[in-house]
Every structure is written in C-alpha cells, then in structure tokens.
Amino acid sequence: MTKKILILPGDGIGPEIVAEARKVLDKVNAQYDLGLCFEEDLLGGAAIDQHGVPLADSTLDKARAADAILMGSVGGPKWDKLDRAIRPEKGLLKLRSSLQLFANLRPAILYPQLADASSLKPEVVAGLDILIVRELTGGIYFGEPRGIRTLENGEREGFNTYKYSESEIERIGRNAFEMAMKRNKRLVSVDKANVLEATVLWREVMDRLAPDYPEVTLSHMYVDNAAMQLVRAPKQFDVMVTGNMFGDILSDAAAMLTGSIGMLPSASLDKNGRGLYEPCHGSAPDIAGQGIANPLATILSASMMLRYTLNQPAVADAIELAVSKVLDQGLRTADIMSAGMVQVSTAAMGDAVVAAL
Ligand code: NAD
Ligand code: IPM
Ligand code: MN
Image (cartoon, rainbow, N blue to C red):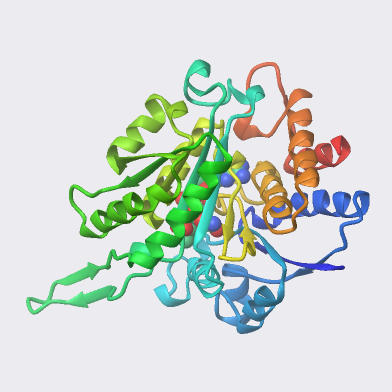
C-alpha cells in the first residue's frame, strides 16, 4: 500500500535541510520497500511569492490528503514587513490548526558524541533524554480577541488572549501521561499558576487526570523555575508538558543542551497520530544559502515520521543509528563542530547518513 508524503521545504535553510531528509527517506524507501510516494509544495514565504498567501487552499487540501507531512522551516526578512495576516508563520500556524495537530513532541536527546558541543558541562548533559510535550493549537497563539487597537488617547495597544478550555488541556495532558508511561514515568507539568488563571485551570486538570495513570509521578513547576532547572540540572526531567508559548521557549532552551538547535526534531500529531514533522529551529536566514546548516534535526524528524505515523519503528531506529554512526565518524556541521572533528557541509552530512544506512 502506498503512503503519501507531502514535502513542504519552506524558506531560508528549509529547502537545504529538507533535501537531505529526502535523500534519507528515498534510501529507506528503497531499502525497506516502504511504498512511500512524495509530493512537494510551497509553504510560507515561498508560497507568498507564488500565490500571495502563505498557505494556498490547494496546499491545505494536499496536506489533508497526505498520510504525513515533512516540513523545513518558514519565514525570513523578505516577508517580515508584510501584513500580519499573510506572513509566512501564519501559513504554518494555519496548517497546524486546520489539521488539529495539537500534540507537539520535541525530544531533546544528547548524542554522547556531542557532549563537547553543548554549552553546558558534559557531566550536566551526559545521558540527557527529555521529551517536551507542547500544546500546539491553543493558548495565547490562537486566543481571541487579539490585535492592535487605538485607544481613546490616540495611543495604540497590542493585546492577546491566553486561554485554554478543559478539553484542550485534557487531550494534551492524556497524551503526555501516555508518553510518560512509555518512558521513565515522570511527568512535570509547567505552568504559571501563581499568576495566570488559564494555567490555574491547566494545573487542576493535570491533577484530575493523574489518578488514571497511577504509575506516573506528576509534579508541577512554574515556567520561570523550569527554564532555570533546564540549564541547572536538566536530567531531572523525563517528560515535560506545557502550553503553546512556554513549550516554544523551553524547547529552544532544551535544544542547546543537545549541542545545537540543529539537532532538535519534532512531531505534531492529531488525535489519530497523523502528523506534521519538522525541525524545531527556524529558517536561519543568517546562514541560508551557504550549505552549512545542520540537516540532522530534519533527518531525525523524518525518523519520527516513520515511528509515529508510518508505524515503522525498526526503520526509525535504523535512521537514528545511522546518525549516531556518522557522529562516531567525527563528521560535524559547523554548529556542532568541536576540536579534532571534521567539518562537513549540509549535503555531505546527508550523504554520510545515507551511506551509514
Ligand atoms: P532560527 O531558529 O531560524 O535561528 C536561530 C539561530 O540558530 C541562528 O543563528 C541560526 O543560524 C541557527 N540555526 C537554526 N537552525 C540551524 C541549523 N539547522 N543548523 C545550524 N544553525 C541553525 O530562529 P530565528 O532567527 O529567530 O528565526 C528566523 C526565521 O525563522 C523567522 O522568520 C522565524 O519566524 C522563523 N522560524 C520558523 C520556524 C518554523 O518554521 N518552524 C521556527 C522558528 C523560527
Ligand atoms: C516553532 C516556531 C513557530 C512557533 C513559529 C514560526 C510560528 O517558533 O515551530 O517553534 O512559534 O510555533
Ligand atoms: Mn520556536
């Protein structure tokens, strides 16, 4: 049976890193006879240039029809001055929300070979394996009302709404508890319940779910402390669950523990496990076009696609092992380079992973 994969390279380094993940998918597709067929389309700035909107209806239709989606990254200075409603990032947000991809899994795993690449001491990060479960279709990213309005005194005011319904909290909470069940059974829910009512309710719902998962130890932490604990003693964490904006921020911080944001993959899943797979980083306009971006986060996102949506855990394992072998060979892109290693380009890194398969 064929499986349709929609590929959305996006902007900046997006096309460069997605090309490498595609090489890896082509390789395993042939090697394991997976029956994957690929279609490519535009998202973000590239779609604005072509269609005037960051996500064309035809692209959204293809996304709905696909078994899984692989995305690069969107955005860049070229489109930053556009009206808010049609900026590249809106395309991605619309895709996530239209497909109800509410569960964003962001695993921060330190490959032991990269202990020197982390900005923290090797002993602080050795053995790190954290899963951040970020709510992706609610919270302050989508809350209404929102906007910029002019006040009576002529001054303008920007405003957003931070809200979560019980059912939104419950579905991401159950997802996180279930993830914790498959791991070390420790779940930290991150909130700001000392200040924000939306997260008072968040905490209450998490507590209400806990008895359904008696093997999981649930604890709560304020987001400011969580940010500090992530760089102080990150190995205390197993699974972290949090809202959309806190998860965005904490996952970038967690990325650095693994050596580089170029190492952090993600899966964004709906209730049936259908998903969009993308690296956690952005379009990196500062290095786009230079062939130096790290493609491993995108390659590892493709591996998550095989694990979570395509039900091919052995193939996902093979890709992760190939990445590990390449790191054993001493190959490094610039962002994870350290003394005594061999610096390689984006394409050479992708080729090396394919060869290791
Ligand atoms: P960014 O993640 O693009 O870049 C931050 C820093 O990390 C830069 O120095 C960049 O060079 C580096 N970096 C990122 N990915 C890398 C990789 N694979 N290899 C090596 N280095 C890498 O964040 P930013 O600069 O804040 O945002 C740039 C643009 O990307 C903005 O338009 C933003 O909205 C967009 N963005 C998109 C996504 C997404 O598509 N999911 C995520 C984050 C940011
Ligand atoms: C991410 C990005 C996006 C987010 C932006 C580009 C909308 O930062 O995927 O982490 O904030 O979710
Ligand atoms: Mn982000």
